[in-house]
Image 1 (cartoon, rainbow, N blue to C red):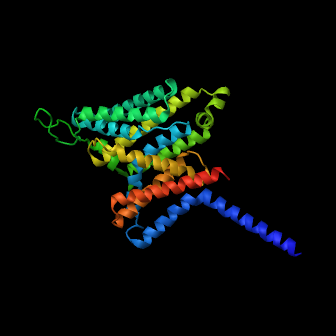
Image 2: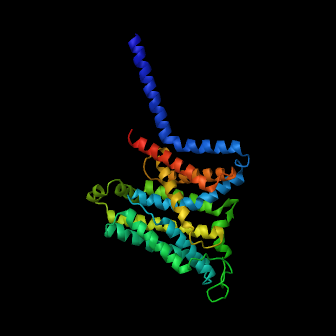
Image 3: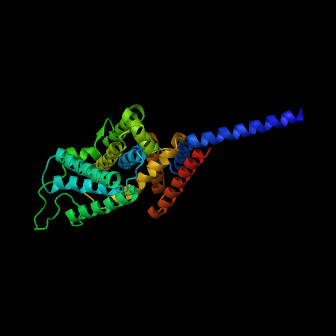
Length: 340
């Protein structure tokens, strides 16, 4: 009788640990987000307000758009380090079309997107055709693109009524229709937030409910097995790099529209935050792989942390410590999940 009771207690204990482990791996990131919101809400009464949550969502919209591109490249088995420089290029080219060349809004949107697609094709050429490791190829592209937009702008930011090299004043300006992309609202909801939520939902459906999405995950899971199964691996990887660059360009356009200038170094911090959001997303719902909904929650976690730490007057350089710890924790849960 005692042996049976002891065995039953052990089985209950093991089952309890397994359930707690499963709960932590599946919902750990969401619990951390809720706990973080609760703590910041207790420390500062201004945190739990509609206006502050709106500001958080507006601030993460740019990171999330860039991170969606990173997620697509990761899902296809690639790794794109050039996303930050592509966002910077989109920022300055969009601003240049408006301020330097007096073009309409659609031109200021189209030109950065076309340039982004070309950079995505360059990444695909280097990694898929020439077979340079993706980390090195996209690192080279990052330097090339950085050099291009710094040469194009001569290192200066682009803004309304800026002095030109010949001593005149820039003929154009940021049009209200372009600024609406980053500053506008629909029914009191910021337009960048609507854009972020809409694109997150669309990409999630494409990756999880369409043949194209299944081919991307098959390519990223095992490229050789996918190729032997008839999957056009090289074409899928090319699409992934082009989509990654397009989303980075879109993030740069939204950034330019939000701040009303073309900043030459705007993409550098976006690269790290976008990568962190995508990798934190691995741990959401215990997926252990790139997925867009997880990336969205990863961006939310980063946004909540930065907003709360800023409200508590934590120095900006110390905030990177917190982001690094959160990323390490997310990667730990992902690794733990894969080994259980």
